[in-house]
Image (cartoon, helix red, strand yellow):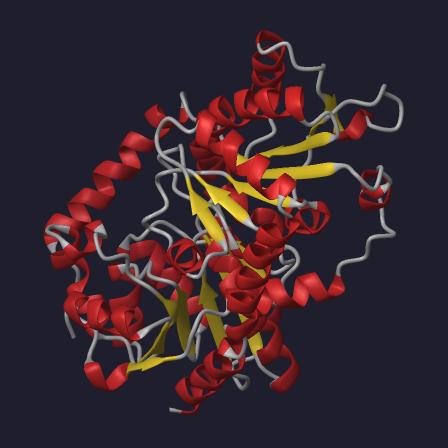
Length: 434
């Protein structure tokens, strides 16, 4: 059985040593480093207290929130269909901590760094029957060590962007043996299957199962309760109000959205902007208020202060975890990330409510956005997006038919994607059965 190359192991070591320096300038990296301390011991302690070797254990790893949402319906189905099994869930990004606490797993924690010692210790403690990765992150050290122990290996909701750096050297060379070791690969599309084969996955291991996020967003939309706060309060507006929800925005997105909204408000006094920044920390919120003041917009009101503040057409969401439901209140949506290097955020969340979507120019890495644009459910802006955004808002404000047609196209696309969770769960069950 192959082992990771010395170059890969050296790169992991160097990266780990560089992280404390990077953590001085990045709070997210700092949080990840601090929370990851002792993770090997925590997982081993759980195993000593709770692991039953007579029961199969499925270990699911999803790096961040998006991948976690892909894993969520599969974990829920496994819990329902195989309640006797034990489930472990790991993640990489601190942004996934909140989601992890909501999942039906027996143990959740950070993934240890991909080093031989840590990987071996966790595998020895958990004794998984199967190790399943979500989307694409297949860690070579962990994967190949698990393969040597006879652990079944799977990849679910697998997708590879056409221009992914993983398809190029050195990432492709480092991970090739790990992808080749996978026993089952459930891809989102045929095209993803072809790119997975280019990464090293075996043709006989690959099958198209679809994207489980479609099941997740549909299920969440069906559970949405407008009578809960803050949705009840936010929904109590005039019938002629034109509500825009701008979600998961970064400063680069806000530099387009806020000026375009200032232009719109001058023509449509009933317009309302609910702005949900991706990272609502104090500095970001203060920056939004500063931009609004420079544009002579009414002073934004934070969601947490909505009950006691004077009404404002600009509401800034200063909490996380509710954006997917906020889109239900929208007439139109702007999905952030298209003016930021981190990439576009979920366009499925507004589309499932029949809300037409606008995105920035950097959307090409999102398969969902490409499909939505192709089918008329979304519009992409150019780099200089202020005027085009303002114009599109005006079109959808004045033309209910055009807005409704775009919204229906997006909702139809999302509903058509259901069923992936069932197919993916069947793949995992087959994987454990061997």
